[in-house]
Image (spheres, rainbow, N blue to C red):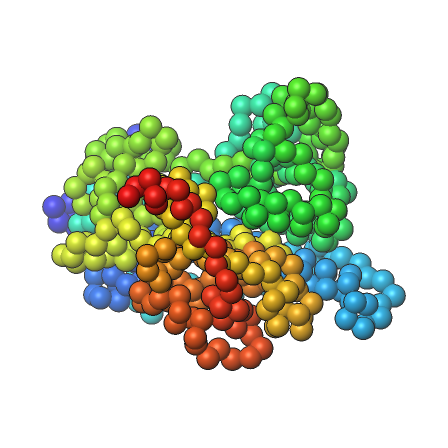
Length: 489
């Protein structure tokens, strides 16, 4: 069809049907991976349009990763001020101005939006602020804020609509109008007592941040441990950290009912070890999982099927069940990290350009931005044992890292799993100050196929946190899961 061919439209547009506009690439949802895709394909001379109903660049620079880390850093500064006398700096008191904390975050977001729009302009990609849905194969209708509509057909279409916070069917929970991370990052007053449902990434990070600002915080987790899939030393370390920070943590708790309204007064009725309890607070934050944004997208009209959990059904090349339609990021069931969304873009870009790149077998690093941070790449001990993989365990306390001593941040540990029959690094975990940065050094070594001895024998600047890797890999390891190895032989 030509770019000017008319297509039947909905009832409100029946007298003035939208013209069909042809693009090389149409992107539904402006997340980080799809945004980078837009700039890249447009920079290569293709005609590209991105449709997003609200955010320039998606959630990461606006309401998620970067804004939350901005707020978390403000909380870390507050903690430094609170403990300033430990560093020989006297203080007579201080106060938290949450409106100033929020405004600092907003200023950063505005700067990022300006940068993104500038890149759209430079690359020639078109950003369309609108609500989009499929109306046919590889054809998307965009409804603009003023009600006008555009129809765009792409030679290829990428769906990158992300996820949203899950809200369990607990009596009274929806009526309580709880905060999600979006509203929590916009608070201009400090909650007197914040109740947090969920001990995952969002719940853990914001619990500590709000506590450090001065709020009373109670965290409620349905499992028996925080980040329960991780090793026991990690979950125990986080539990002790929160205890020392003054955060009340209720584990193995089942919420039965919620009463009241968040921001005014709210009560949670829960059961813990057979005993019913009622917890009262001023605000309620829900951080108990994510749901894919696939409702209302008209995917059935495009031939795009979903999994039983509501995510896009994609193969290892990130192709959906519809020819020419691809999935990127969380909505495609990828791990819930921005850096994975960017790698998803690389996979899709390669395949659209005639390559054959897949998502299987890739490394997935992650970092929980508590203070200290928890970061991991590769196998955990739990995973190695579940797969009957024997390993040498290297582990040191952070007080063995001299840089950590100079800055007074000796809490936590570093550990690494190394193959028994070779010197290959299987996995690395840091529960440490700037643990994510330390992890990245090990990840690069793993990507390069370097043996652990390369890090052990490297000349690393002194005193740095990365220097701790010399101490780690120079320590005496213990062989773990040896029985599995013997049984296998």
